[in-house]
Image (cartoon, rainbow, N blue to C red; front, side):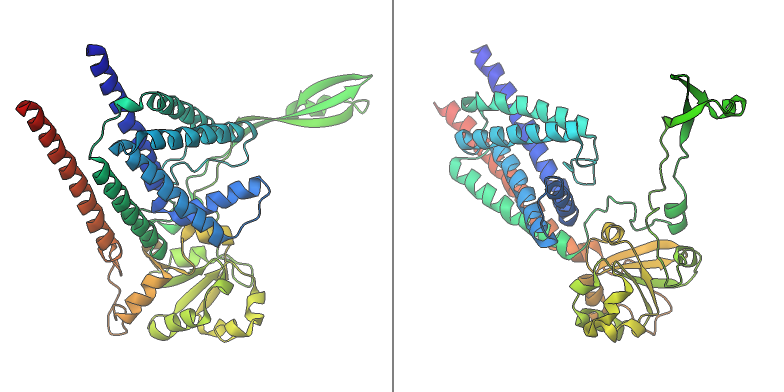
Length: 419
């Protein structure tokens, strides 16, 4: 009897741990679905598969939702025979995939927890080995799973979870991620971001020379003592400490004359509204026209395209309407803002607000920005306005599930006492 009780406790504990890991992993990815889509695109490219951003985004949301719902199903104890098989199959596949990534290193990091927690490929593999071990225990102990609700209640809970997390993904796509895990977050100082934080590398340079068939290695200070009979073969570099660049080193706004505008923006005391367009050709011209028409402040544009884009008649008229136009690396642009276009509000060299194109137009339509005001109030669009509805959904969902489980447990205890 004691053995069965211990086995129940062990299985239930592992059930909660594994379920929470899946939910946490799905949640971190769903905070930034566009970022997860970029990582999926990297995986496709490493295997020689060509895809586009729309397909990657669909895969991103599907993966986030699948992981989260699987985690919820495990925690609830929904249909253990099916759930255990799915969990075991998924962890087996992911362990093999991360073993391949660990050995061949096709991507810098797995993206398991989005940009929230970045771990090495080695750590990712061993993390999956541990999770696989846990799922094996769950696989062979399905009869000891804890059931939070009855079968019908669990099914409704899973359906409710799907609705909540789909809404959460959509909110983070339509707006910018609710939590910004990247360097270019609100409050960041441009000069600090782009010029500080890097570390100089330490290297030892060695040179291999040959004479009479014998090779010898010399340091830089020894080269002056060599005579002309020694023949250079190759050089070798011993890395003592790798150099690192500042976190925002790639944030370079190039003018047509080749100069970098970051320093000017950093020391500009007044408010600047910078429109960032990773790909101008994917934005409807009327969207940009609406921004230019309704915003009383001059707009600057940083785009991931070359100047050839202005040859397109749809955008030609817009070129002269922006106060200034810069060129920005497309990948960096997508890293800074997860929407196309996105808006940075800069004051005295600091990012004071960050909006998606949709939210910026909403702000303009509401008259939050007007020519009569002496300045802008931050934030222009609060997080509650963006995510308030989803937050209420999440709170109600958790409350109903908790109450349902507690009520069921009380009823079970009551029935046992009556017997």
